[in-house]
Length: 136
Image (cartoon, rainbow, N blue to C red):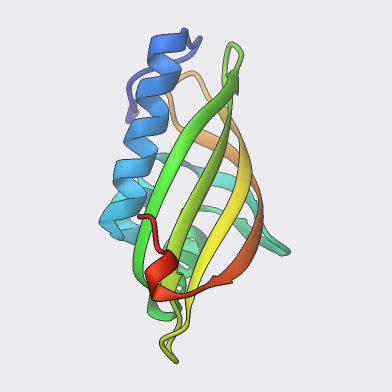
């Protein structure tokens, strides 16, 4: 089976590493690569949308980056336990009309013993910004 290091149980250092790996992967905007960090039957709630399984993850992310242009993400470790990590994040993107947004949110992650994310629950809010207000 495919393992995604670091593996649970997490320490402070391995939780920080897992968060950074997730940030780097999402900033690659490569849905196929990103999906490999999740279990085959992963469960997501992203805003009000529910996504189940790697195939749906790929489809979701492909659509996301067709609508969210010039995407840049930052994640920060909020808390962790044995096989769970909570993060806060912000990202900026431009919609198809050229309007800039900053999205703020929190995610709760649960990993299996192989370090693959089995559950991802994300709460996200968007704020309209001007190009001069960009930070990322």
